[in-house]
Length: 72
Image (tube, rainbow, N blue to C red; front, side, top):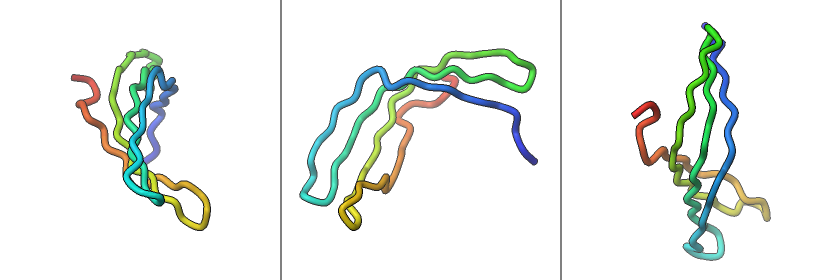
């Protein structure tokens, strides 16, 4: 079943840490507007931890973790 919920967000701040030549960690703070099927919009502020790994000369997201509960 497809959801009609949509989201648009903006990274308002970010910082990174080099783990080694093939891995970095990024902490991103995101403001996001979420629209439910009725058209109601809620604004969420969240922090996301991304682990990125270099694969064949390209950086790829290896994991993405929300550090706070959405809607909390």
